[in-house]
Image (cartoon, rainbow, N blue to C red; front, side):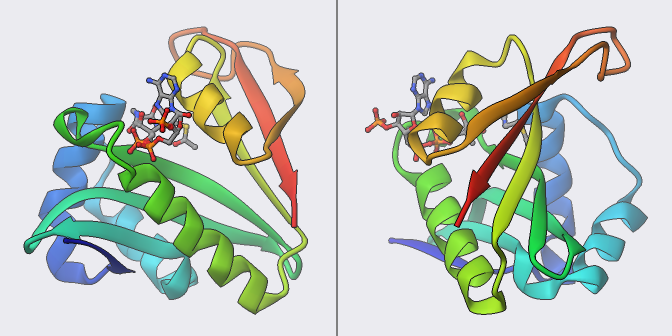
Length: 145
Ligand code: ACO
């Protein structure tokens, strides 16, 4: 039932709602359209029977290096493989594009996400002191392909 496909501008409302619920952030809609423009195949949504339940947005940092900017799944849909389906599709895209390393930042207290990323072979590269606007530290995590 779950399908992962590239983001389309029609998905904007759904993605904004997931970011609000799952990441508690409210970014201008132009940000998502810019990300879409920069790397179309690196912005993926997961839908179930036509409803978007999660997404992954990324950018290319250098010819062989990508960065996951946001990965989020609606609370009610977690622990059902949606995040994994998005990550699998994303890593496939990276391989097709010749990406050699993927990096991301995550809140130090976000144990669920850190466990998820660790399971995918990401390792903590270093601490990012007071990385978030509320003063929380972040971890830079990286995985080599
Ligand atoms: N506790 C422990 N392990 C977990 C948890 C958890 N809460 N969630 C996922 N995992 C691990 C488990 O090993 C799990 O496998 P299992 O369920 O068979 O044990 C495995 O990851 C895969 O889980 P999925 O079901 O594929 O992942 P899910 O759909 O729940 O998505 C995600 C994971 C995206 C981290 C989700 O928890 C989420 O949206 N969290 C809120 C938003 C967030 O924190 N996003 C990351 C911020 S960092 C950034 O965006 C760059």
